[in-house]
Image 1: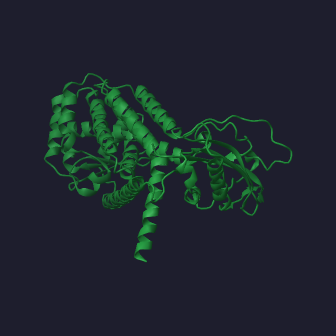
Image 2: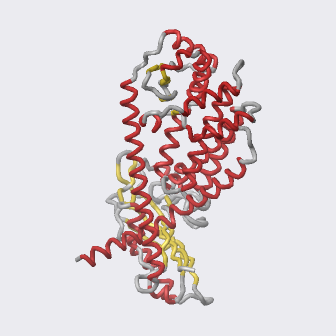
Length: 466
């Protein structure tokens, strides 16, 4: 029994490993290459902290968005691997299934590789769950901190905040809390921002003015919202080292951009502002604010002071947003299209054809997802023995009861080691594809609340290890 259970676990890990290799690895590797190229390009733009900040935010956010688009096979990108001009436009084409020619006794090394990838995927998922749990704990602690520190700033402080906020074009109301147990300034909230200030600032008008400018620039740019999004991406992809590098860079350039805005204010001297930053190094922030709020961090002090000494002018926000959007859209599009091809519109459907997808309110859904179909396909041994591989496109109609009917091989493009693959080997691949689809069940498509016939197709690629 233990051996049977162990084999089940290995089979599941093997299937998970194959899914990761075929569906996840491509978009993630592509993002890594794009992120590395973007990092090198951004090094050519020194002295522009706002550009550096927003560009890196765009690259980071492209990772979950692009991966989700590639996995969900959404809308514009819903096309199978390779050219499928032979699949009628009236049929909804499922994402491609790739079946490797690796049997238990034929290629144990390859199976071990996929099992290893599966174990790594489980570990990465576990690490992400732990990181997300910590993030949720930070959010809860910050909420409690905010509840214990309601707005209580003197009227003259609140009026100064209102005046500076208006000068920055901030229309949202900004509340302020001043308390002796607040070690360093901090900004929390997007729609209803709140500033937490040390009570000692009230005795130094110049320090208070510089601090308010810094924190209100955070409010102006919705930095807290961006900070939370970056933290979520970092938690979800905690196993990717480049994500951490980008997240740290985002925090550094975010603060540098605020420093540049403070230095651009009339009558603010660099040495005076640097001395204010040094003052915060002698204090230690409490855990909840520093965990999720936008609070001062001493780890970036040296680089921030160095940047201030070479400061010349602030970056243009328009350039920053355009570059960020360009990087996000470019990376997102490439990731979403990393495993898809093109599809050509065919002629109009025949009068007796099933209901076209455009007229179906709810498309059919495969019970158990594509993983169920993948698990049901076996690479025929005769095809492996003769080195036959290729693609088989199965077309079928999902009946109102959810069963696939009218199964047919729409296209079979296979080839072997010789000039002509054995007919039996090629036929075995078609039979394997048909049998796997025939064993599936679907949630039927619906039109105006009624289950209807819906034509579909799925490309199944059989490939041998190189």
